[in-house]
Structure formats: C-alpha cells, structure tokens
Image 1 (tube, rainbow, N blue to C red):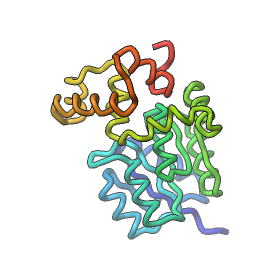
Image 2 (cartoon, rainbow, N blue to C red; image 1 turned 120 degrees about the vertical axis):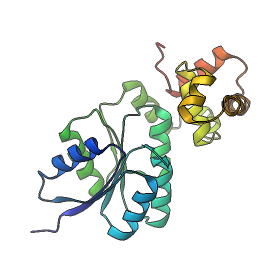
Image 3 (cartoon, rainbow, N blue to C red; image 1 turned 90 degrees about the vertical axis):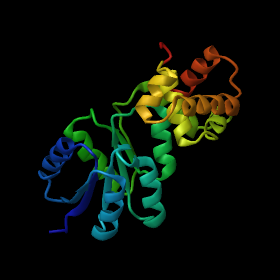
Image 4 (tube, rainbow, N blue to C red; image 1 turned 60 degrees about the vertical axis):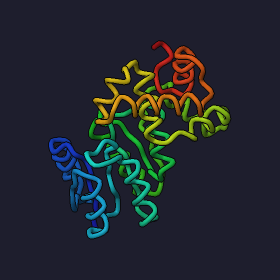
Length: 222
C-alpha cells in the first residue's frame, strides 16, 4: 500500500478545519498532518512537517493566503497549493494563480468537490472550481486567451491591497465602511481610491463601476 499524501490545512475557522479533516479522513490515501489558523503558523508548519499539499484560505488574521502562497512557492517550489475560499471574484482567483497556486475552489462546493480538487492538484494538474460564476470563468478564459491583455495589464499594476479596495468600492461600500472592514483610516482608503483611478485612467464613479464590471469584480447586472 502506498504512503498516504500528507495534507496541511491553513484556515482560521476551526469548524471548517474539523469538517475538512473529517472528509479527508474517509480516504486512506490522504492524511492531515497539521493545521494552522494564521500565516505565520502555516509557514512554520510547512517548514517542519514537509506536507505534500497545502490547503489555504485567503483571509487569515495576520495576512493574505495569496501572499502566503507566494512565499511558500518561493521557498518550496515543488509544494502544490490549493486555495479554498469564500471569495469568488476574479481579482482573488487571478491573484491566487499568479502567486503559484495549483487550484482554486469555493468553500460552498461539496465534499466530493474538495476531493476532486485535491486529487487533481496532487497529480500535478491545475483545478478551477466549476461552481464559480460563469462570468468569472469566462473572464479567466479571456485572460488566458489574451483577449483582455490591455485591460488586465493595467489592473495588474495595482497592488493586492488596491485590488481589494477596488473590489469593495465596486460592491458599493463607502470609504468609511471599507476603512472599518480593513482596520485602516478613511484617509488611507481615499488615497488607495485615488491611486486606483490614476493607474487605471478612470475619471468618474460611473467609469469606475464599468471598469470593475469588465474585470469581473462585480456582476454586469449590478
């Protein structure tokens, strides 16, 4: 019998970790060797446990799972990473793959979905959850096909924080609400908004929303 593949779970929700462990426990070819609730602990355990796969959430208390993915891939290029997140917007998905993730799936997918994703990634493939919004999947397809080269080149000039602020602004949150959500000052959000509009050449709030819709950050119907 082959040695089970060693899985490390990095997610700050204990109930989700417990549910995922229980699901993976039904498979004799998979073994959860550790779990962490922060980027720092995840990085430490990855170095000490040498897992075959890291399953990472994006939103962690001390940082972004995307940045953690980038750091892990830089130090351990052969370690595959599967992002499992509640976020289903283009900016998060594209940034995850750009950081080196091998797969991305929604937490709303069922247990069979996570097993399929893990199997694909461990086999050396790439996995994108089919339950994600069709408009997001089409936009990702457009990017890979270079149909939105100019648009996404400008968007890629934004920092991850600016991309996050742009998404929240596009969803209709006020600078005050975003500041409270991200634990920063209103002035910081206004500075980010100015930088975003300058980098993307956006002149008005209407143009801002249209640009966000073309990127897939919000649904066109919004």
